[in-house]
Length: 172
Image (cartoon, rainbow, N blue to C red; front, side, top):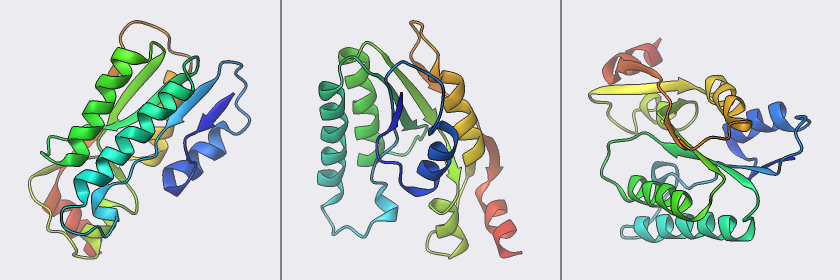
C-alpha cells in the first residue's frame, strides 16, 4: 500500500491520481510534506522554528513506521537557508536511522510555488534555475517505488534555464 504524507497541494493531487490504486503490497510512505518558507507568511525569526518542526515531523514519521519504506522528496538546492539545512538534516537522519528509504532530490517544481512568485513579481529571478514538471516528478517517484538497493540518495535533473528567461516567458 502506498500512503502519502499529506496528499495536499499540486504534487499531492498528482500523486493521489497515480498511486491511489497502485498494485503493490509493500508499505510505502511518500513523504512530500514540508513547509516551504516563501509560501508562508512567517514572522522574522520564525523560519528556523518552522523548519525544526518539519524536521521533527519527519523523524516522528520514521519512528512511527519503522518497517515502511519512506520515499523522501527533498530538494536539490545550493541556497544557504534553514529550509535546505533541515531538509539535508532529514536526509542524514533517514540514512542513519531508517534502513528502507529512498531520497529523491528534485529541482524547482514548475507550479504555483516559486514560478508563481516570479510571475507575480514577488521575487526577482537571478542566475540559472533548474526546473522540473510535476508530471516528471511523479514519473520519477514511480520509478523508485520498487527500488531496493544500497544507494539511496538520487539527484534528479531538470531543465536548466536562465531565471530572467523564465520571467520573460511568464510575461506572455
